[in-house]
Length: 157
Image (cartoon, rainbow, N blue to C red; front, side, top):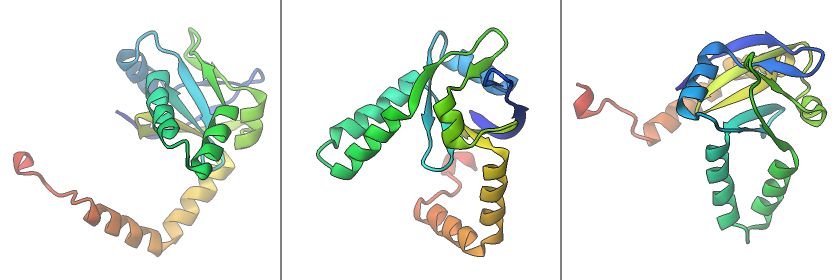
């Protein structure tokens, strides 16, 4: 599982290292697989294994008669690119995605279970500060977890 947060520098050639623990997980679970770098719904990027991104894309295509989903499908495809890790475990981020996410010197890499998120340090700090300041967010989170019935299973006891 991909969890945790890491802070890395982007180099002058727009390469970002994938943290070793994330790299190991991805290479172990998705051997010889290409990755897709996609603009996120906020000012950040997603890094998906291609097989997972293909599943998400197919789901969108099934609802293609929905005009709003078609717009998002176009957006995701316009702001995505296949990437591979080099021997040092870095990915090359194209200029249009650097600009979209506002990536500068420091890049925050967040594990989100099945994919990675790449944030500018400024966007990440703003996101986390606003979330933590908002007690409403914690109430919403509590309601969401309660509605999902996430409780201890019998087998967990």
